Length: 201
Image (cartoon, rainbow, N blue to C red):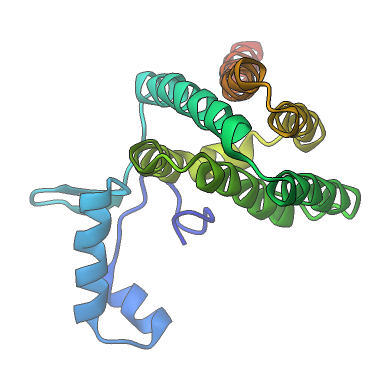
């Protein structure tokens, strides 16, 4: 519910309400809440309760910076290690994303987007990079979904897959890094546009 945006950043977690919605006792909800605090998706504030974590602009910017480096690393390793079958599967996922865009199924597009990057991580076979990358992705799911520019991002996916398929390590690294930094640029533009809209009121 947090990752899909059904529970928004800053929202207070009500164990009783969630237990009722899920038709379970409060114990498993409490256990899940503790786990999500440890995972960084929730934050516990003494005497106030548990809330969905809100990231500061600095935290978001730093997340993009580190994720760009990890994405570049994994794309480079994928270019070294990919098989023909794996390269073909990346291309199929891109085609599936194109189909989701045409159908206006943006939620489905985002799901396939995650699968595309997950496959690159598996091909890269770097457990430390994947672990840190996945932690960073969990922190920014809601933000990335709201900033989705599917046509542009899928063009970037295609350029990454082409470099991986060709086995061009440094080109794959650069395209992976640029892909995430382009997302950072879209996020910064959204902040500037929002500030301009407020100033115009």
